Image (cartoon, rainbow, N blue to C red; front, side):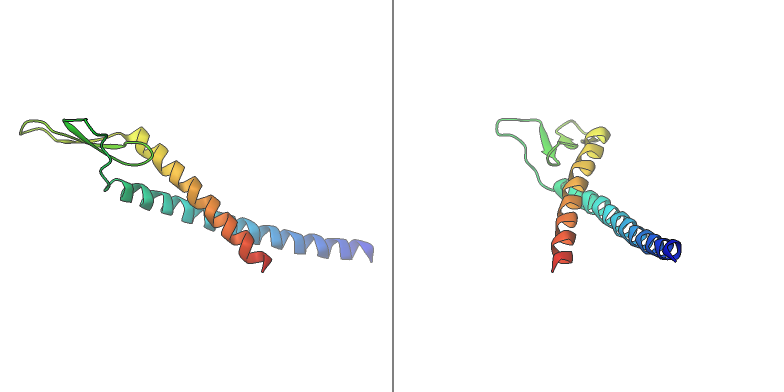
Length: 109
């Protein structure tokens, strides 16, 4: 009898673990999508330091998009892919932490 009860408890725990993993994977997907959206929104905001001439900086916390003031015939936009990826990761971590805290707070109620 003890063995059957043990197996039933183990199955119940594994279902809870599956639910936790599913919710964590959903939070991770939302965090990555949120990180991409926030990164692209920060690409719209110009935060060029005062006194810098010849370029405009976009992206936060890292500058991943630069508009160069150059002559005609050149592409004025320079995208820095590594900084873009690091920016997405930074914002994804922020969004994940917020989602994690909100999920813990709402589960307690």
